[in-house]
Amino acid sequence: MSNVATSRNEDCEEMPRVSARRAATRERLAEAAIRIFARKGVEGATVEEICDEAGFTRGAFYSNFESKNALCIDVLQRCMGSTLEALTVELPSVTDTDLPVAEKLDMAIRLATRTVSGDPDTIMAINEIRLQAVRDPELRPAYLAFNSSTEPVLNELVSDVIVANGVHLGIPVADLLSILGTLYEQQMIEAVIAEAPDRTAIVSEKMTTLLKALITE
Image 1 (spheres, rainbow, N blue to C red):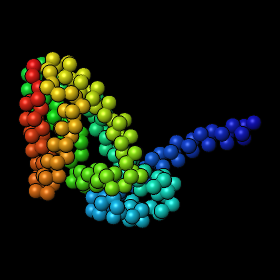
Image 2: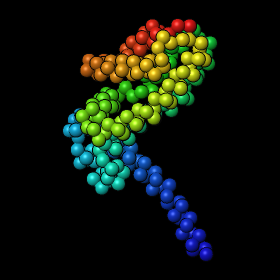
Image 3: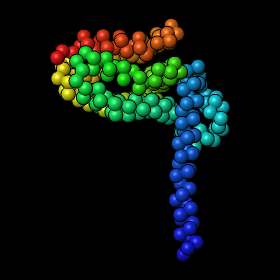
Image 4: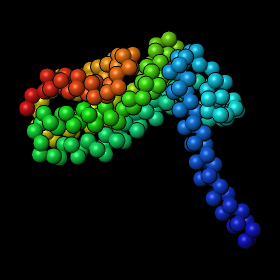
C-alpha cells in the first residue's frame, strides 16, 4: 500500500512540473512566432523557422499546436488576455478618483495604450494575423470566435466606467471600441514606420481627442 501511495504522490508532484514546462514551451513558441510573423508575415513563416527561433524541434511544436493557425490564435489570446487583466484591475482605480472627467479620460486612455503592447514586432504580428484571416478561410472562423469572446468583456468594462462617471456617448459602446481600436492600430503602424520614439504617447493623445469629442457629461 505504501508503495502505491508513494507512486501516486510522485505522479501528482510530477504533473504540475510537466504542465509548467508545457506552458513555458507554448510561451516560447508564441514569442518566437511574433518575431517571425513580424519579419515574414504568417504565410511566409514556416513551422521550422518558428521552432528554430524558439530553440525547439517540430515535435515540440506539434505536441502543443495542431497547426500554425492554432498558434496564431494563441498569440492573439496572450496579447488580449494580458490587456484585459490589466484593465480589469487598474481601470476602476481611475474611475474612483475625484478628478474631472476630462482628466480621467486622459488617464484611462494612457492606461489602455500602456497595457496593449507597443512593441513593434507585436504590433506587426497582430496585424499580420488579421491579414492572414482575410486570406485564409480556415483561420477565419477561429479569428471571429476569438473576437466574439473578447468583445463582450471589453464592452462591459467600458460601459461600467461610463456609467460610474455619469457621461453619455453619442454612439454605442461597441462602436466606440471598434473606432478606438482601428485608430490605435493604424496610428501605431504609422508611428512604427516613422520610428517615433514616443509612439504610445502620440497615439494616446489622438485617442483621447477622439473620445472627448464623442462624449458628453
